[in-house]
Image: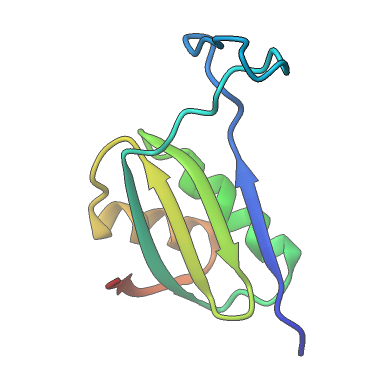
Length: 104
């Protein structure tokens, strides 16, 4: 089985500005203030990744979700601390099980 990583990134916000020195004219991407990694059980395909990502993105403050399908690890970037219970509820709503937080 090959390893598959799917990353969903949010677009830069309108409040970002660009100095223009790089010549691209693109605003720099806003970085997440916090990054948390969770272990999720039961994901087997791209649909699973899409479902978990969509539910987690509904949580207030979540601005980035990256799912490693091969390992079941889900990395969540957010502007605030996320309670395990709210992440578990979102993962459950998607139809999967939160095993727990992965300590770095």
